[in-house]
Length: 267
Image 1 (cartoon, rainbow, N blue to C red):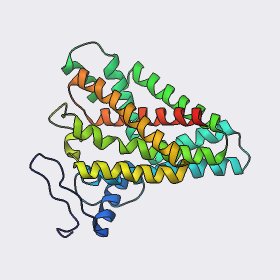
Image 2: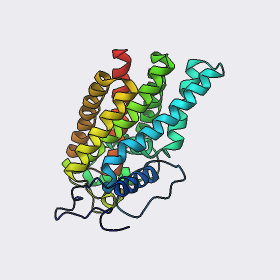
Image 3: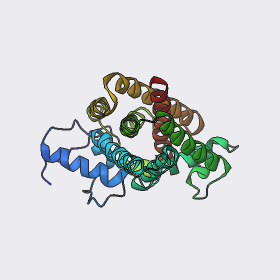
């Protein structure tokens, strides 16, 4: 990879302003899809923060897979409930349950009593506790319930794509606005995205969501996602004084739930 397609790192640890070279965009898309999905994509070497503006594209792919499964299930005569369950299951499988795992660990951290070190230890523990189980159960139920409430396959497809796109677009905001909660781990390896890539990612998400569910609903969904992610980041700041990979996963999941609920109310 030549220097024109690989971004440099700024002195503050964040990526420098990304360029518009087609090769760089392709590299970032492969990096994002290789990290956020289980699809057989050979991701190039590099920190995931380099691909911050491509996060929504990876989300669009996950949401599109769920949409296709839902449409296929409805086409063969399955009920709306069963189609919604299959669609949500498909997004979890394609995404490798990466964000769901973060939500469960974040919920366990919020539920445990103790100081900051105790909470960080709970988040790192591979075992899942009662709060984590409840969080996953309720989040899955809310997703399925929202898709059933939307009903029309066109609305469901648009909602799935919008939720996954806008949810992932919020992650670079947290990565830039909060300090790291620990000196090692996935969040440290991910790096810090540049301001330009963060804003460009929001623009990409808004554009994709506008095609998926309409400009008005897309704009509202983007705002709802940012607010939801901000609330999660504030909880993390107060509890562990920063963010980890699990915090990012939880923020993305909560943003998704907020978007789906909002789209149901708009519809």
